[in-house]
Length: 256
Image (cartoon, rainbow, N blue to C red; front, side, top):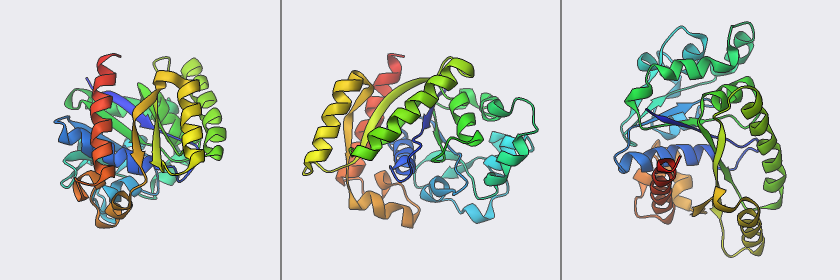
C-alpha cells in the first residue's frame, strides 16, 4: 500500500518541484516504486521528469474530471525511472469544472485508490497556492513534506501553511500530518540561513529532516535537459543530498 505525500508550500520559488522530482528519482535509485503526480498547471514536474507536456493523450486534468484513470494517463520517466501522472495548462480549467462535481475535494484520492497497491510512494507536486487542486492533494495524502529556504519570509509563509494543514486535518482528512520540513537551497556561508535553520530545529524538533539540500548549480541546470538532478549529475552535492533524503524518508515512514 503506497504512502502518499504532498510536497507543498504556499510560497512560490522554494524548490517544491525540484524536491518532488529529485526525491522521486532518489527513491527510485533506492529500489522504491514511485508515482509522481503533477498537480500544478505549469507542468514543471512533468518537464523535469523528461515528458513533453504539449502532446499528452491524457493528464491529471482528465483524471480529476473522471474521464480517464491513473493507469491510462500515467507515463514513464525513463531518465528518473519512476511513473508520472503528467499535467499541462489544461489543468487550470479543472478548478472551475470541479466546483459543480460531487466529492470535489476527494477526486484525486479516489483516483489514486485504484493504483494504491502498485507503488511504495506517491509524491504530489502541489501548486504554490491554496486552491481546489492543492486541497485535493492534501485530502489524498498521508502527510506533507514542506520544502523551505532558511530566510525570514519563509517563516511567515510557514505559519500560514501549518494553519491550512490543521484545518484540512480537522475537517477533511484526519490522517493528514506534517511529515517534516526540508531545508533547501541552503548556503552555510550565510549567517541568516544558520539562524533560521536553528530556529526551525528549536521550534519543530524532530519534524525537521536531518538532510539539508545545498544550493547547487547542477540541480538548477537539470530541468532544462528534462532529467532529474539525481540522474543528471549523480556525483554532485545536490544529487547526493536528495538520495540521502530518500533514505531518510524510507526510515521515517517505517516509524509511521
